[in-house]
Image (cartoon, rainbow, N blue to C red):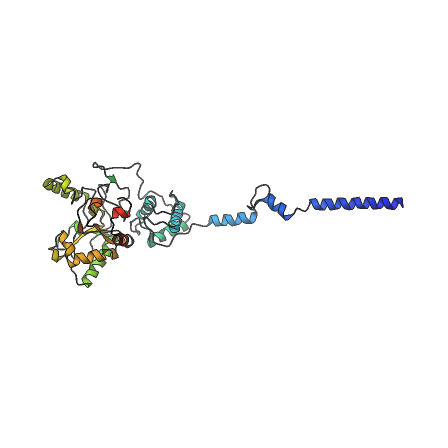
Amino acid sequence: MNIQIQKSVILGILFSLLFVLAACNTEPAEVKKELSGNNGSDSTGNEDRSMTNGSEKEDDLPAEVPKVHLQKLDENDDVKALQQVLNEIGYKLKENGIFDDPTARAITDLQLQFEALMVTGIYEENTSRMLDELIQDNDHEFEPGKGLPRQAEEVTTSNGSIILANPYDQLALVNKEFALPEDYSPEDLVIPDIPFPFEEDLPKKQMREIAAKPLEEMFQAAEEAGLQLYAQSGYRSYERQDAIFASNANQHGEEEANTFSARPGESEHQTGLTMDVTSPDADFGLTVAFAETAEGKWVKEHAADFGFIIRYPEGKEDITEYQYEPWHLRYVGEKAAKEIMEQEITLEEYLGQS
């Protein structure tokens, strides 16, 4: 009997030991989860292999190039995606989702490096396609800043106007505070196929290509409406503006002259994005009387449909610092033009510089 009791005790002890050992080797799911944490890492901090592989695959994928039209002042996720793509090819932009001046500079710089692209600072289909090619080509030798080098510091004219670092910008603000570089002359100047009241082949017939075609379309629409629009004065070089202002200053005094004539560098005509228009009923002159003609009224109503604004509107002289000029049209693109004309504001107000 004693021997049987001893065997039973020994067996009981053995079973107890086996049970304890089994329990020690089997962790509850909750304990494992607590030790590994919620980030897929084990107790040593190493990431779970499946998650690591998936993450690496996502990081290896090139950024997605936006397929929408974007320009200065736009603020959305597409702009942020564009900034991410531009950074991937070497730019150093804040990915803030705001199409700001640095973003416009980057787009302009990229466009300047490819002859096939129109240089505007506007992100559109052709620029998108070129950017997509750069992203897909791992062997590209693209050099950010090669087309439009960054200024080391802000430069001003003798009159104190800030010289624009990006004169190619379609939305460049040129006035008494912001001037174009003395040596800036657009390389894409063309003569639009529209009527002029003179035959001479003068530089003032020219406009930048980006503005010339919309102007042709506007003149065609006016003709279909039974109107007679004529173009009087487009591109004007820095040197030509210097001579014009000097003449006006000699005749009227510099202060008075600067109410209707710009100092050199401060004239929109140098951008190549401006055209003064007139009509036979205004005696082909550039006068306020043009606003009362059928052509003048039509231009005020329809210019924005083609991307143009009346740059110096009536009642805004305190902002533009120039007299009312119903004949002076500036190309800014349809999106900006419609917003400016519908809100009855100036380019200064639109860009937040009033």
